[in-house]
Amino acid sequence: MRSLHVFVALLLASLLPGCSSSSSHSNPKTLQSVAVTPAQPSVALGVQQQFKATGMYSDGTSQDLTSTAVWTSSQTAVATISPGGLAITKATGTSSITAMSPSGVSGSTMLTVTAVFGGIVGTSAVNTTSAMLTSIVVTPGNPGIGVTATEQFTATGHFSDSSSLNLTRQVTWSSSEVGVAVINSSGIATPVATGSSTITATLKGVNGSTVLTVH
Image 1: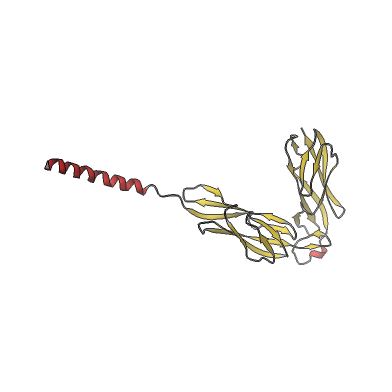
Image 2: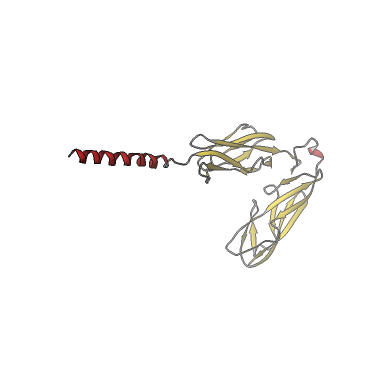
């Protein structure tokens, strides 16, 4: 009987280190950092900016935390930000945009809001009133899409002081062939039928265009 007791004791002793070793490898991954994008964007007064928060974990994986993060703006007089990371500009200046995860890890970036003058968006440089809008470039150039798809267009304004700015929400959008595609005030084109249509962005008499082909 004593030999049986000794055998059981030795068996238990041999198993315990294995259990301890197994538990040491079951540690869950931890959130190490949060990246806020786009990095240091510059937008015009009155324009909204969507931010994204991405969590970086100890096991090398990443996860979108945009909807679960707590968003804050350091200068609410310059820009406010919604729970989903959408910033609304209020005045020219800069504000630090921060996303904090539920576990308390945070990341941030700087948002710069540029000036508006005479109904035209300009830069925040010293002589903003002397800068004039010289051209508008519409992208993507000559895209082709199916009748069930949509296309987001972007209007980039180029100014006389060599600066440029996203004017997508300031321009007036139009489609030359509404029977082929229509376009809303945000630059999103929706196909109606196959064919081609010229998509134009206009602001203060300056315009830019591209051709959309619907297959």
